[in-house]
Amino acid sequence: MADSNYSLNKVMLIGNVGRAPEMRFTPSGVPTTSFSVATERRIKSPEGDWSSTADWHNIVTWEKLAERMNELLTKGSKVYIEGRIQTRSWQAQDGTKQFRTEIVANDVKLLTPRNNREGGSMNGVPAGMHDDMGPGQDSDSAEDLPF
Image (cartoon, rainbow, N blue to C red; front, top):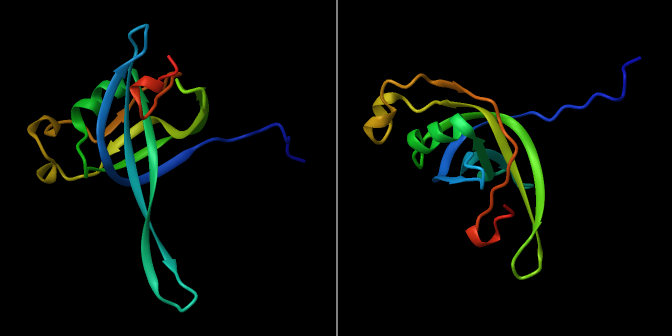
């Protein structure tokens, strides 16, 4: 019988960058870059009609991968993301408890063909980029940052 103490937290997404990368630094100087990715799925209505809807995912990268993503990604780029789901909470300045669910990426592959990418900085960059992920926090608002 299988051991029930095993668990798995792994996410794989293919989608389009919806928000340009934003790089910040922890108080100790560790870079973190966040951006959003939209994935599309098709839904069939009770009447049998098909439509598409987008799911939005908050992506966080750390250290060298964060630096690369800040330099290379642009809004609309197609990417493959691999990482883990993380939900965290913090106390906002107004005293309310805030929650955020995000994907902490440890692998990002650029899928947009080189001739379709915006800007010249992406040319010549290998498609697969791997890096160790680090612990950390991210927030939509700089004033609500938990670090």
